[in-house]
Length: 570
Image 1: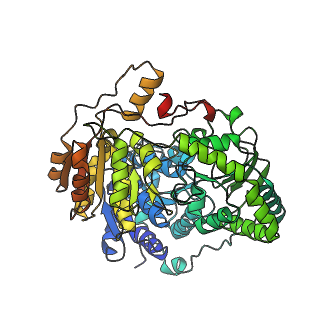
Image 2 (image 1 turned 60 degrees about the vertical axis):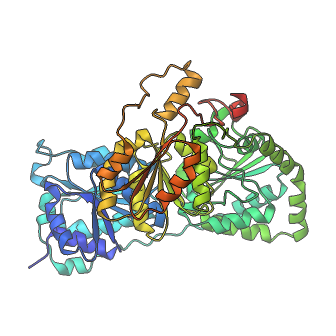
Image 3 (image 1 turned 90 degrees about the vertical axis):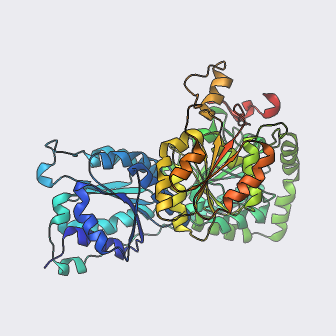
């Protein structure tokens, strides 16, 4: 008998090397789940408790290991619940294939039960989407979807599969000969442009290298480090670029942007050459565009030419893979006379003196005295206890910025966070996906008490599959970042940010079968964290931190880097 579309789909996933699927069943995908059960020894399905979390788990999986994450959800509310995760993946260039069920083709457009226009809804936030109306096209669509998801600038692709298509039968002979025939043309970096970039870097007096998540996606960390060390160039990563260059390296200035270091922001503001690699000049980095790096020639390396001039107009561009572009740039630099390179390094002595002065005057310090736990202490202690080796997943808010500022990220794919969309509730499910991708690594979700309550039901998923993630809650009983803005810019009008009515997180963890821990005083913090990190299984740590601690520095929205507020100026 010829196979059903559902079997063809599963076989196509197997041929793509899929080992894990995150999903939630429903009527429109029952044929697929039936075949998935038959293939359970080859593909492991992880049953989530909410479809949004399924996508975040797939994101965590993809970001931790670099493979395409796969999601399977039903039609209607299953698909709409997944949209936030899909949009998040699109903003952060995460490769996903999201398979959604759909009502039978004969019912499309009739407002049938659990019908929704998935293709229309997801069109603005995917690289591409498909509505498969013919079972004979299904395998080819799957292979093309995977190719699109991981090629170029990575991102999510949606495949909408009507129930009758998953039930329809198609010959094996046709399926056996399905291949993805398109040969991608590899675009080599423009050598003339690279020579100009090398010349500009060598002759610059105040250069800065600004690196984003594209460096990590391209696996270009070694090439970046070689270029930087060859000319002793200052490096500043974005939030998504953390780990692309070791934060403890003497040439690293720390993160730039709204909550970046004083030295990084001032170096960009005073630079005469800014080389952006795999970054997109996000508004949280640039602040007021008219005053962003006003004295600098702008050079932009990106795999997506659509990014060139989108917000900041560059003087030089290099389109292509970041790894290939940086490798070619390194070759151009090393082709110069050694004396010329030494002279180039010496030319920047005064520039480094200024940068070191900024670092000394405005470090990332905090007040660690008193009877309350400071959030910064939590991050610093996690860094010490894990020796900077853990994979850290975060939600969005103050805790996210403290992690970005203070945790020692020394390699790629170590920080998994929601950057572009800023999705609360991301951290816990992302940690589950990351733990599955990297079972030998310590994975910690650092979350706020607000975001944790959006997806804490996924503790059940972690416990069910015996995934030893650790969840550290910075519990300040507020929507902390919103409260900070209300304090600084709205005359302390704390409107609807009080989260003091909340569950006992220790009891909640125990109710799910996880370990529950709590720290309320600085003297307890180290021992409690150590016990939680050593717990055999899922652990949740409720850390009661100072309620009104703020993240500094902060560049107010629409302001320039020179207008940043530091702790000393607050």
